[in-house]
Image (tube, rainbow, N blue to C red; front, side, top):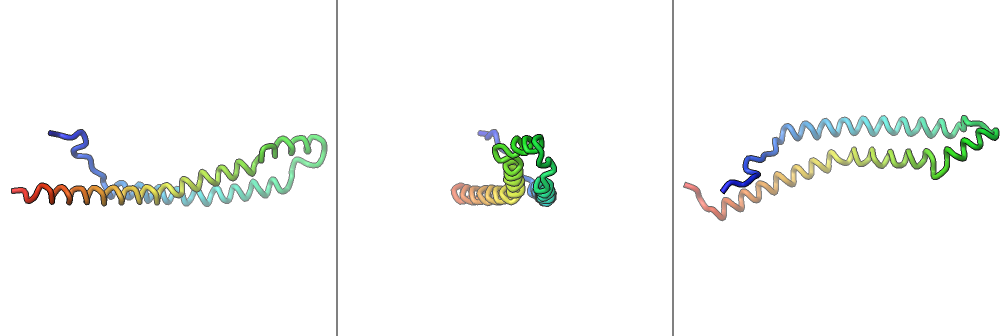
Length: 115
């Protein structure tokens, strides 16, 4: 009887390279986002909208509901999830390969020596 998943294999070097590339990309993204967040916070701190009626109306609308602080916080959370995905995927891969090995060893013990 043939299983639908016969022949399924994880090509470790290929997946490993992909995870390495993910980690490099996510590290660069983390640094880039941190720089941009700092720049946005600096610009907001300068209050370029001014203190006139229009500027204060803009500031009120801009800061409503947490304004850019919420956006930056949500973005930082998303970037952190992207950064953590690489190591999490690597652990998943390692666990899957270990499980496959343990299952194969268990089946070999049950089946006994093959002639």
